Image (tube, rainbow, N blue to C red):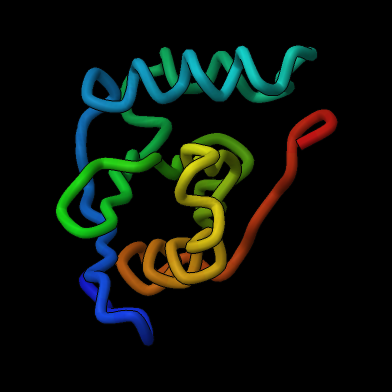
Length: 112
């Protein structure tokens, strides 16, 4: 899914692999600096769908959607991270991710 902001910047959210978002997850965990309730489901094969977020073609964050276990019949966005420099585009990136994934539920973790 691709969208353009009022400034003309292209934003997108595309499904990717866990490996591709690994560095982003490390930044997320470091910034959270607390227990992350659903941290372990990423390591369970098939439990999550990962999306890379881009602004102007540059990767700026990710979103994770739980699709198995308690979320089997209700896929849920449970992790969302955007680099600090791009947080002025946070709501636009969030909307692009929701449109790309088709998810209509969110769940927060810990102090997120």
